[in-house]
Image (tube, rainbow, N blue to C red; front, top):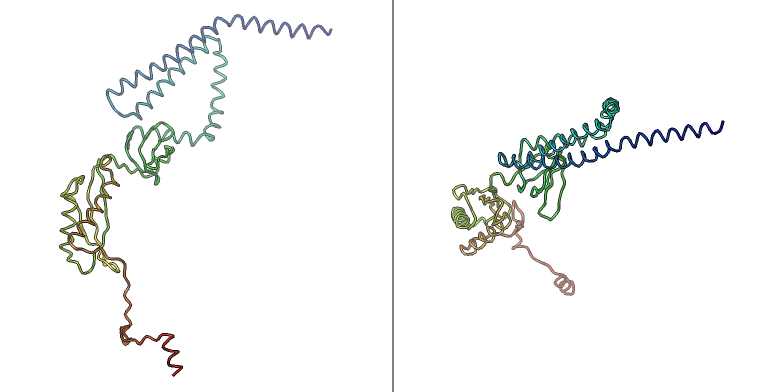
Length: 303
């Protein structure tokens, strides 16, 4: 009686072994199919990129479609391998459970899905390309990589920032490269004693003769306010961007050039000053006040 369960187990194991042996040829074919479809998927992806590059230079869109083609080839291979292994019936039950599993995964990976969809939209809209200098959510840098999940920026401080595509799509995108130029705005102040017409002529002449300034007919100059110790003005001019000379380099050159021109023309950039006037409306002027010191007080008391 005790030998019957053992015999049953042995028979079961033997049947599994026989089934495994029968599947060995199919498993060998399946292994070969895995290699074949991996190679086909890679070749198909590279071939599409090569053909797409002749029609468009949109790398984000090229990466998107090449990834889709890669996945489609692998999925086709997966179904063929299931057929070779005789797992067609198991496939039906798997597909039946995908609906429930997919619903659960949808809630769990909704952020990933949002980034994926945003990546697709960005690939089609193409507000920037690799190498552009952009600013997103107060982060400014060069676009070094884009995919269906994140956009990678290299900041000017030497950092790599990975921004989710959903944040990029929902935020404001400032592209500093698309127009290939950038405006520099400088605020300067001059003394109240200066001739304002002369100041304007000197500043405009200085900026127009500065190497690196473009669109010289679009240079802007305007007096902005009466400050406490100066009359302030703004000078606005355009430089090529990105490129050499760079934005900060040109800003530095402009400030030094204006200062040198003011020194040559004896134009003063005043320090902040404060005037104390005690003679307003009945008060006594400071120059008319008698200053008493402790020493003088002691001498008076001694006398």
